[in-house]
Image: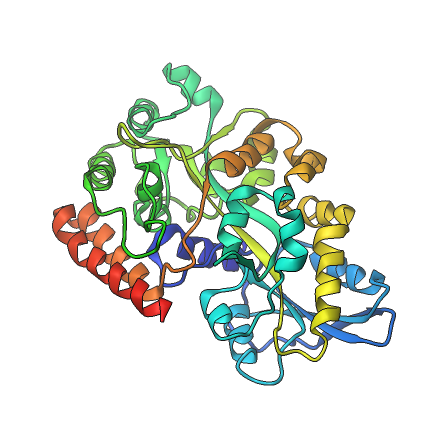
Length: 427
């Protein structure tokens, strides 16, 4: 299983410190592995260094080395970085030993932008922004500027066994009430109804409760939290009530980010990642479907969290213009490579909407449904969702669901902290 993806998706799902999401790679737990240059190719007199985190899927490393070698206008050195990529990148950007081009989860972070570490890519991105998934571009834009180009999209979604739900006479859930009813209808001594992690789902579902209740994290001006109201509190209580029924499988043989519980028949429905779909298809064939997280309450909406790594250019590099030309060539112009990057190594969604139909694993069935969910119902943490706010939010959600605390009382201080954090990060 891909531990980087687990950590980054959990973070962005609401109950972790950073506002990061979607990664696809393994994590050896340290920085001891070599990150020496892996491939140098291309032509021209300019030398560029490009960093990638370590993707877990076989073939990715060889593919990005091939892309670097095929670029005609510069000598591009692709560097593979096992271990804690985010930590290593953050440290490098504070020195003079940083890469010309690098990938960053959800594009450039607020710190990178405010500290002048990333080049403005608006001139190459804005003319083609309509070609990319709108929800992704909304997250990648900050103060009407782009500082990264989306590479590929990952997401979370709800898997269900068709035959099990049909036998119980229930439909794939579109509302949370339907999810609770279906989970309790199919739960047996041998199979759980719904599984979302060995913590009862409070970790990964995090900010899902905001989006599924029909709310946003902040107001448009980013001056205050907009989730501190009754519909959000009712969503938390609804999940708390459900968590006390037989329908919620409290523990399984693996965590939510591993499809094993669903594959092994431990649960009829599971919240998981798109990356588990190949294993699930191998185990169950056509006997599964996918839905977004159901709407909660009368003003709710279905929702899925997504994440996208983005290609950034270091603002203080010696060859900024050449680096911008390279990322435009690779992530805007070279559509065959973009499809291969998304489709040939695991299951991912191309960042350009027109390329989704060219991805074989998304052409039909659950894969096509998943891509549609991102386009129509995708959400991710706001760029100003800070570490302190994420930690406070985490504690409050846990107290409400696990310890029966009053939601309004718990989130009064979270709302106050949100206002303080927003003011702080704006400088």
